[in-house]
Length: 185
Figure 1: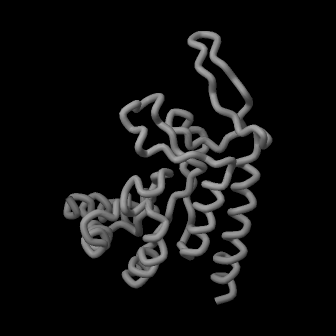
Figure 2: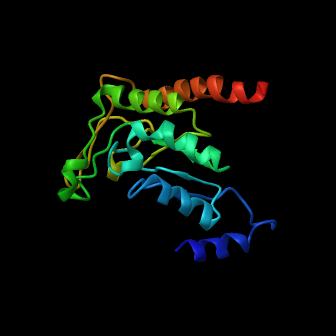
Figure 3: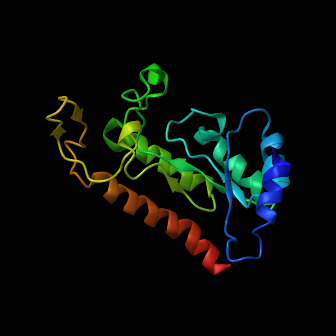
């Protein structure tokens, strides 16, 4: 309900509780409907959250550049979420159709490349330590639970810090292309 969000956000604007408030960009229906919601509800912008490309229309990397342009014209921010892969079948066994294999880092690289190419206002990473959805980027070593024998994935043959190193590299690339450009203007 855009009206309820607008009322809630207006109540904190200009106070110590003010901030940058983003809503989830689903991308369903028409993008005009989604953009209208962002504006009418008083959000500063929208983000995609989902690390599984295509989980929602908004998480499709092909939609990111047009969404950046659309929301920028409206004075709003757009933040796509990138992730190293996605596999939540341990907690949602019925969701196997949304599994996105990491492909030894290539999935993450492709997501970051698409985000940088879209020239968004920022990039979000889903997630640092969400092992239940298989989106973690924190250091990982081979581990098998002594309680239930469950094996946790590592990043072999890459190092335990592989995804943190990749995140640093990609975020530096983003900062060089986007933040440097903005600083010169």
